[in-house]
Image (cartoon, rainbow, N blue to C red; front, side, top):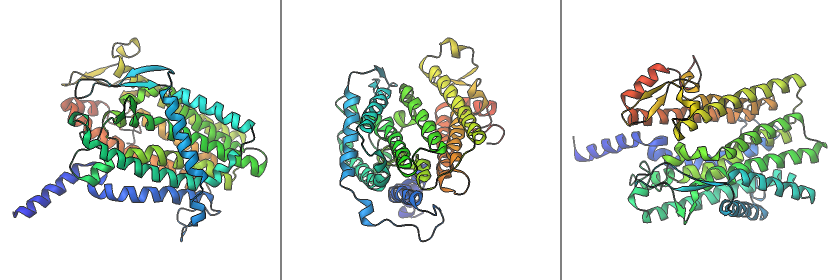
Length: 425
């Protein structure tokens, strides 16, 4: 084989080992996902709200820009940066890093949610038109996308001054496009301010709840009171965000914090994708009001409750086992020993399927969309996207666990054959 053919074969093989389609994905995703965010917002505001509408509704330049948008966005980031630095809550240590150290993290995200809530109630009491967020959705999304690109460029450049042990194992390939996308540095910090941890659960996740509230207030402006469907969507998603922030310490053991570098993938996901696509149902309901009977509402509430119970119980069991395997609540569970010295749970929630938390997540996602009825596919975008995301993430988990635990993982898979859906998948 000629040398250039060998090099090509090596490159293709190396790309196939990378996440998200390698170099091709690293080029396409930063182009198409921001456009997708803007497209979905435009659709949710259009009378047809059809994913297959052609030509799609294109916004004018005036609709994409409002000088108030960058002021609100940067002010929101600044508010939560100040809350992050306030001496509220406890300080926890992360997992052991490659150099043997542990980083410290403030556990005060729930305080941030509560302070944000008080601030919003004050604004409402003063007569602030929170419903104007509906008109600002596109300009805010444009600004969030621009901030994501600029912030990612900063993170990529600063990573070249980071020591080698501080780089993410999968983000230091030497391919600038891929490394920019996936993230070179694992835990970029300015002093004690952890940039990845801050973005993971704070400005974007709490911002999602604020946008939902703005959609509810817009509906009040248009119709005099919020609909039952809008109340359910706001309540379900507020519960989800509040739960994530109440259990903020658990994020310290997740793939995002432990494994992934901080690049465009996570920056854009945290600051633009989550707040502007996860709450599409609320934006949809402003233009497409739905009527729910008490029976339908009760069924939807029950579905969300079941999903939340599975999600919370399975995550709590996993986090407790990771933090303290000797705790009485997990010592009775059956485990499998691995060559790394760690053990794998094969009973309890984690003996039902390999990812019971994903099952609960998907049941909740469906409950968020059902209040929007069945006349349009758009409100179910989140369910469809989230199913694809979790199946992809499950595949990533599978590869990493097989590489890490070897034969023990094969034994675990035989004991727990179903991945997410019992007796289905």
